[in-house]
Length: 93
Image: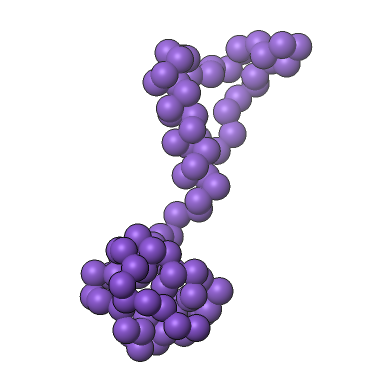
């Protein structure tokens, strides 16, 4: 796979990231080190690959916080009714 170094920064990051996302971590490091991309692109891709959080959990948290902030929604508490359901307790906190 050949990548053009004339592409803008975001396209270079995307190309390198997509090229190594399926690789094992050690292979990712070797692939990035051997690539012809500049150091800024390599560092950005390594930061993206190093993201250790659960993306689904983080995304859900961000969406919930945005909805809460935007719509002025209060936190759910034990005893709240949601249609025909009563909240006994929060899970995971």
